[in-house]
Amino acid sequence: MEKIKQNIIKIFSPPTSLLLCMIIFCTVSLIFIFSQNKEDPVFSCIIYSISAYSLTSICFKIPKIYRFLYNLAQSNPLSQKYITDYLFRFQVSLYLSFGVNLVYATFKLIVGLFFSSHWWVSIAAYYMVLAVARLLLVRYVHSHTHNRNLKDEFIRYRMCGFMLFIINIAFMGIVMQMIWQDKGYHYPGFLIYFVAAYTFYCITISIFNLIRYRKLENPVLTAAKAISLVNALSSLIALETALFSQFGKNAQFKELMIETTGFIVCIFIFILAFFMVLKGNIMLKKLNKADKKVNL
Image (tube, rainbow, N blue to C red):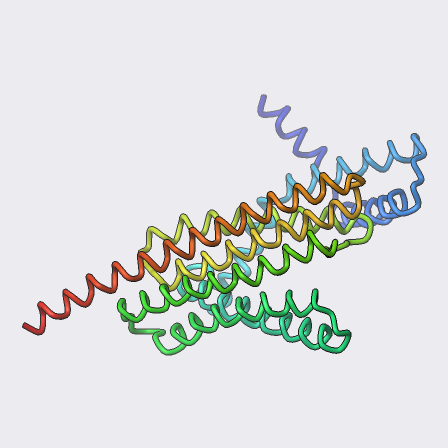
């Protein structure tokens, strides 16, 4: 049994240079097949077989790749801290997400104003509010790197809840334009598959992180993960319009699905925002009572 296992590993462990050549060859060939609609059975079968073999070989190499990257990261103090310190990792991701939101919102706003596009301005408004919500957390994290203040954290947590109400209004404006003006997104060719995979990855990771970091009882961190989840769910309806623009032909079904998805996401954002505001108020009242007892 062990010999069979080693033989299988040997079969799916080609030299790295050969594997890279196969990956490049398959990528170029698949792009050619899908873009030109060249569905030659023999050629397609060969390419699909090589692609399957390459993918399987990559899966066999994942443990080695992981160990190599992990050891490489451990050799650098900064990357080592990023791996081991979840608070530092949270700060980095928060700064990056805020920067990306701000740049993207500014770009959309400039283009929207230049072309007098209500659609682009609506998207810019959504991402601008998202950036402001993350700015509240960035400012707190920057000023409380080494010392925590639970009361201030719940104030930020509650403020993010209020910001989610505003984000929900901006999102509703985008959904209304999708329904009434047939606005939406379009991704050329095979790019839509990567966008779909990335969207579901973001939703899965956001849900996982929200559940995981709630156990740490860190309101700022939980608020940041809640905002990430809202952003991921909002991108789901963008993906939906892109899928309909490429594959959908039934206009009534498209409108019904966008209305349904938009309604569900809006209700979810509203409930999440209400819960954050309610919990923030409850915890702040408890902390204020505790402070009064201490002062007495």
